[in-house]
Image 1 (cartoon, rainbow, N blue to C red):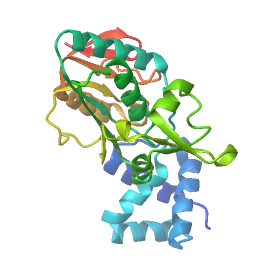
Image 2: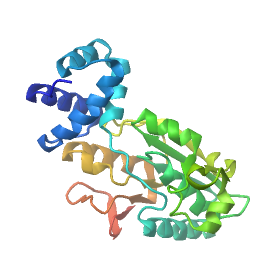
Image 3: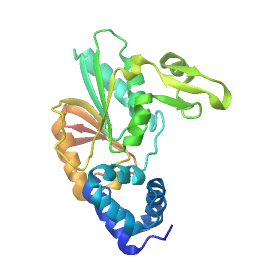
Image 4: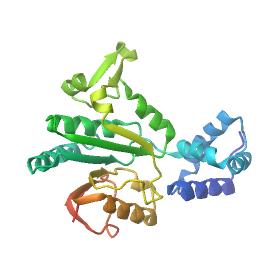
Length: 269
């Protein structure tokens, strides 16, 4: 495969930004070359200029393949666990105040660990039969969404889940390195998965939402995309609703209508 030329990288970078809001710096050239190169091999293309021509001719279907290739999908069950402790306490308080309907959004769900963690936490915190819970889980990557729908995880992937929760909410098949855990319908039936581009608000939801987990995704956006996304999240959240972001994400100067609660947690005023 021929090495990527600077103009090819810059064109791919521009296309990715225009269609997803993901801002790739010049430091990502090697990453783009490797990941897009893998996609090109699958298509039988060995030149980046030829791939760009292919992308132009098959834009609607291939743009999904390109975004799948460059998206970073790093996640785990109960990642940043204090967020899950906090939402459990909040859900209990809302329930005690008389609320029975709860709507949560995992905005960049990757391979599904975050929405499944949310489902477990809420089911454990609010086991009452009168609770009406739904979780929307979205991602731009079609490959990860396909994984979400299966809800099947290798033994090492479920290691962060406490053993009692794992046995209560998952079933296992196989042994040793072949062991696989599948989330039970009591969890998966609560979650709806959809492909969504976070850089293109308004989104097709009316709200109000009780909480939005938009963690470790805004680091890939520039300030213009972040401001639009945060404004849309503000529109969808109920008064007093919660926004959870990643610890590496600073919202200073970009967020209005929210009150700081604690590091990486904000409440809509």
